[in-house]
Image (tube, helix red, strand yellow):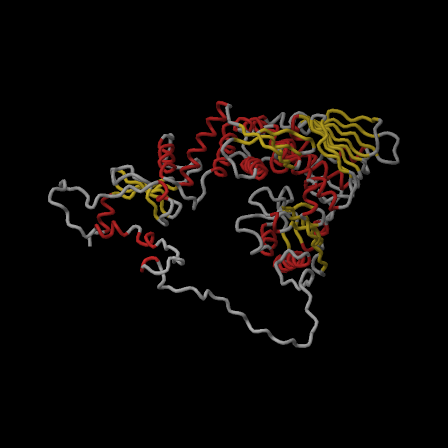
Amino acid sequence: MSDIIHLLPDSVANQIAAGEVIQRPASVIKELVENAIDAEATEVHVLVTDAGKTGMQVIDNGKGMSETDARLAFERHATSKIREAADLFALRTMGFRGEALASIAAVAEVELKTRLADEELGTRLLLAGSKVESQEPVSCPKGSNFSVKNLFFNVPARRKFLKTNSTELSNILAEFERIVLVHPDVAFYLYSNDSELFNLPVMPLRQRIIAVFGKKLNQQLLSVEVDTTLVKISGYVAKPETARKKGAHQYFFVNGRYMRHPYFHRAVMDAFEHLIPAGEQISYFIYFEVDPANIDVNIHPTKTEIKFENEQAVWQILSAAVKEALGKFNAVPSIDFDTEGLPDIPVYERPRPVEPLQVHYNADYNPFKTSSYGGDRSYSRPRTEWESLYTGLEKASRMNEEVPPDAPAGAEWPPAAIPSEDSSSSLPPMMFGGGSAAVGQHWQFKGRYILTSVKSGLMLIDQHRAHVRVLFDRYMEQIRQKHGLVQGVLFPEIVQFPASEAAVLENIQEDMSAVGFELTSLGGGSYAINGVPSGIEGLNPVDLVRNMVHTALEKGCDVKEEVQSVLALTLARAAAIVYGQVLSADEMVALVDDLFACEAPNYTPDGHAVLTTIREEEIERLFAK
């Protein structure tokens, strides 16, 4: 039998490694910018074309590389950060495994220009598909200039799975934000298709956060600060009143590296227990400084999942630090002993004679001197509307009457009174909806369900879900026909988005306009809401627009139909009638009619049941005994 085991060529091995390290253009930006920071750069420029699909460029003023180092840097596992396994547990740099540049060169065309500070000439290196095409001296500034073009040119299957430009740009901006938030001592600049998206000079951390996410955040941040022998924690948490269901900015950093940590996330949310509604999130920017020997950053190729040696102890310290911040800034309800505004305590005075109370009464009043008894007509007792106390007893008394012999056979006796529309809204928890006992009569039960009799039994309809189904179909039709009704606002509202979310808004703005939103870009991620869809009176347009953007961002929708569905469903949920809302007879009839005019009345667009039927046989079985 012949041998079947063989070594993979370096180019193939690098492509396999690239599948883990380089997943999309954002991965390239992350690796190159982190390398620039490790090179002690104080200024980093990032330029992307067509969301990185066509080209990416990262320019820094760091140390630069020699001719030999520039060539060796693209070999797999070539690194200046570690020399032995023990160095893995003393790392304070971003990259260390030596896979990034080799992986990038394996799936793209790369040009590098780099020069050391004490050298007159630098080095220009061209690579494509892991192969060095040329290397020559060149005149260039100090530092490094990486240009990456045609990502995945030799792996068409990978390139085919890239998302739309807006989605890929949003991912690039998200990675960029994570880096700039932890390095306020470095100036960053980012350009997309020659348009400047970020201009971040060196600034304090709080100002860097505000520069990225907007000035409004400045009034929402509370400082967190604690220093122990185990860990040093600093950063900011938002005030409880800023909690939201979606779109909270939540960041953890350890030793200058972004990380995801669900366990520590629960520690922060535990400190906000009973301060924010269930299901809502709070923004936070938490920075950990620990001994590198107590963490392991080498458990994931992208180094975003980090293992702590004393997670439970750090959890308790973090939770206590956040609670202290909330208490320090009076974010936690407490007894207030401030006497400002309270009345002054009167000075003791000598007792004065107490005056007796004066009793006033009508000496001419006589209850027997009324006009009813022929007495003095100068006084009359006020009339009491006692007849209203007996309203509704007429039908009860008629229930005891015998059925007259001339009544039709099988007729209901006494005849059912048809309630008016006004009376239907005053009979909780079950309300008549009008009509007689015939098929089609509607009741509302506890402000949540509509009950109606059908041929097979009793149908229960969830009023909120039914309205969501109706509105969703209506909004989808408006998007397709692009004839949504716009209602102008008297005072335009302003909504602010960070760059990563503004890119998503640009992608869905056309569909939002089709529904009825009129948005005008003011620059810098700010938009003016000049018009909203007709029929959503009472809803906050800022929250609604922000919720639609965050939903589209979470879903990661790139197919046009899916984006439209997300927008229509989000708007339908916000505008649908709520549980507890009392409906008149006409409103119930209209809702049921609109529901059964839909193509799929049984389920909401996201698959929840709208109605169910209790068959007549089941009802009879309940009363069989």
